[in-house]
Image 1: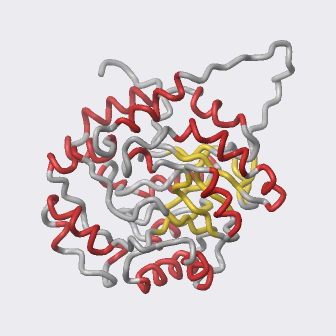
Image 2 (image 1 turned 120 degrees about the vertical axis):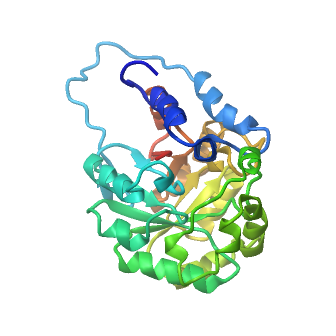
Length: 315
C-alpha cells in the first residue's frame, strides 16, 4: 500500500501484507461461511447519524468508569489471542498501549504472554478472560494467579462449549504456538504440533457441560467481580443478572464461533431494554464485536443506550 496509513482499515491492509497468510487468516477469519463476520460490519452501515446543530461542543469529555475504574473513553481492549503472531512483544505491548490510553485491557486466556508478564509490564487496569476446561483445577489456578497479580475482574467467556469451525484455519493447517500460561498445568504438545489436531484437542479439553449453576462455583474461587461474555439475547441477560454477576458482554465472539448468529449491534437495543431495571444494581453492559474500527461511526453508534462500552479487538 502506497503512503502512510490514515485509518484502521488501511492498517488492516498493511497487516495482510506483513503477516504470514496463516496468521492473518487466523486474526481476520470467521466461522463456517463467514456470514456473521460480514454482517458484523454491514450492520453498522445501516445505522445513520442525525446530528443536532448549534450545540456547544467546545469542551468534550468522553471519560467514564467501568466497575468503578476510570477510563478516558467508553472504549476498552477486548480479549484476543496470541498477539505475538503479530508483534514480538505480544500482549505486553498491548497492555502498555492500554495504560497510555488510560483504558482497560482484558487479557485473553490464550495470550502469548503470561498473566505475570503482562501484570509487571505497566500499570494498566487489567481484567482476565477465562475459559473453563474439564479440569476445573486449571481454571482455579489461573484465576488465583490473575487475582494475585492485580487483575480487577474476571471475564467468563460462555459462548464456546466447542471450538468454532474456521475453514481458513483448517485449509491453512493453522499451527498455534504453545501457551506459556498453561505450562506445567496441561500437556499441550500434540495439538500444537499439527494444526489439523486443534479441533479435536479443543473438544477433548473444553467443558461443554458448563452452565449457569457453575457461576456459584466460580464465585467461590475468587473475590474478583465476574462478567459474562457471549450474551446475545434478553433472556440470557436477565438470567445473568439473576445469578448475580457484575455485568455482561454482548458478543457473538467476533463471528468466530457460531455462524448465522445476528450481528452484535442488531441485538444491542433488545438486550439493553431488558436490563434497564437492573441498572440500579450497577449492572454493566459491554458491547463486544470483532472490530477493525475503520472510522468513528461504529463506536458512536453503540453509545445510544446508557452505560455501554465498546470493546475493540485485534492486536
